[in-house]
Length: 145
Image 1 (cartoon, rainbow, N blue to C red):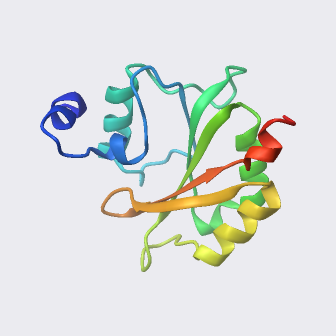
Image 2 (cartoon, rainbow, N blue to C red; image 1 turned 45 degrees about the vertical axis):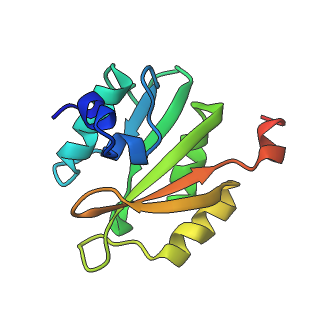
């Protein structure tokens, strides 16, 4: 079933839960073989275009940031995610669920987000193996960017 058909029938797709709308410009960073293909497909179908490459200069509505504990400095990665983000854009930090290899503790996510100047607004189950944390720049700092 397509994301549009799922939406029309009143069920929420993974793209709905991420707030991805038609025409959204989405950058994906940190993709690897362990990423959730169903989530990626739902986002691509809803947005209606391919992911923007992380080396692009394009301004994006959403950054999907796949992250595992061993990937390095999370605060630095979140600061990097802010660069291409539109003023009202969102970073979705996708991390392995509890008990999965590469799991990141919520306290580590919160600390890194604060260091990067972001606020956590919600968390979701983003797939069988992945959790999603929605991060945004506080309204007061958005007007300064």
